[in-house]
Length: 205
Image (tube, rainbow, N blue to C red; front, side, top):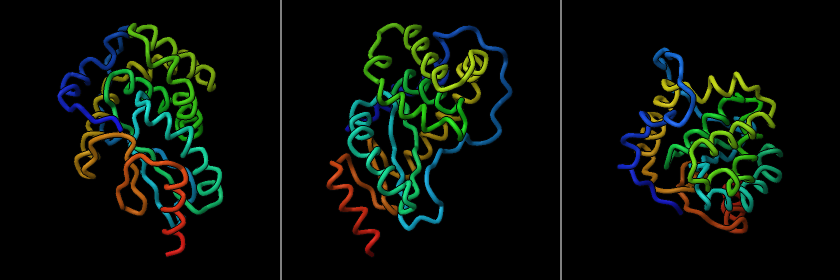
């Protein structure tokens, strides 16, 4: 599990788009950006995952746990799933901005691509290379260049996302990723077998 270095976040909002093309002036964000969810809101089990797109443990959780969770529990109406983004660094913030650029229709498709391709885009030391690879993911998901530029250069949105993330982390006492809540009970990273057992216990209760 990656632990959050909160000091590293102090200058993140100001640096969020530093490696990108100059942005047009943005109006101040007036409301929280919100989270993205999958499954029926009426599902008996509510799962909330805190994850960073640059966290390798989160990529492993996505590959080994989330995909089974989706097919066996979310898609079958047993679980309502919400992702809460964590930003350890500007790369993770930019990735989230690209995912959000797709809206409800494309968010989780881009989310899957970001985790599946994490080793390709998140490991570069060149910020512009990272931005270009993130744009490629967005384009592959069906976004256009103009939309991606607008989303990545939305400084007000970036600052609102950081504010929301910090408030959520503090409220839930989260210090690292992945952290998962099942019907309000906090759990650390685990195997699919262990997670499935927790879900089945909640469903049986």
